[in-house]
Image 1 (cartoon, rainbow, N blue to C red):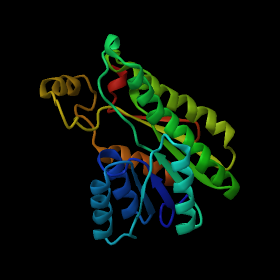
Image 2: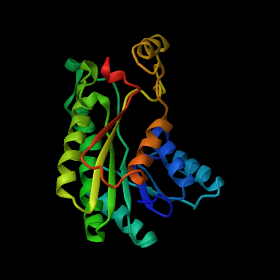
Image 3: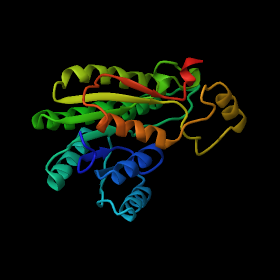
Image 4: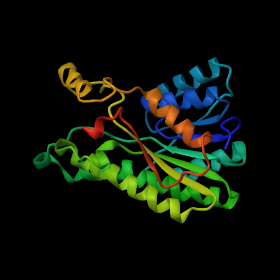
Length: 246
C-alpha cells in the first residue's frame, strides 16, 4: 500500500509518538486524521504543524476511544470527508505507575477501557469498513512490557499483552483483505513528569544500541508496515534497541 493519498487515522495523535507518526505520514503524502479526547489545543497545534509542511490539511476529530458511539461517529466523519479509511493506527493509551497493593478497581478499568477495549472497538468499527472495501491495514501500538511484565505497572502490561493477543486474532479474522500488526516500543521518550536521569542511564547501559529510542523510531516502523510489505500480518515488531534481549 502506498502512503501517498492513503487515509490514515492515528489515535492519540495530539502529542508524543502519535504526533510524530502523524507528521511523518503527512510528509509522505497521507491524508492524516488526528484523534484526541481532551487535548484539543495540542491536536490543533499538530494539525498546524502538518499544514505548515505543505501537506494536506488533516481532519481533526474528538472522541473517546473507549466508547463505541464515538468510534461510530468518527467513522461517519471520515467516510463523509474521504469516502474510505485505508489505515488505522491504534496509538492512544494511558500509562502510569500502579504499585500492586495500591491498585484500585477504577484504575484497572481505566487501563482496560482505553488500552485494550479502545483498540478492540476501533478494529471492529473500522475493520468492518476495510473488509467491505477489501483493503486496509491496522497497526496497533503495543509495548515490550506485554512480554516482560513490570511489577509496578501490572494493569498497563496486561492491557498491552491483550493488544498483542488481539492483533494475532484479528490477523486471522480480518484476512485476507486486511493486515493487522503491532509495534512494541521499548523506552522511546522520557515521561513528562518524574523523569529519573540515573534510571535512564542504567537502561541505556543495558541496551545493545546504547540509547533510548525516539518517537520517530516508532513512526518509521509504522510507515514500514504500511508501505514496506503487504505480506506481513499477525506480527509484533519490537522497537527497543535490543533491550528485551538483556
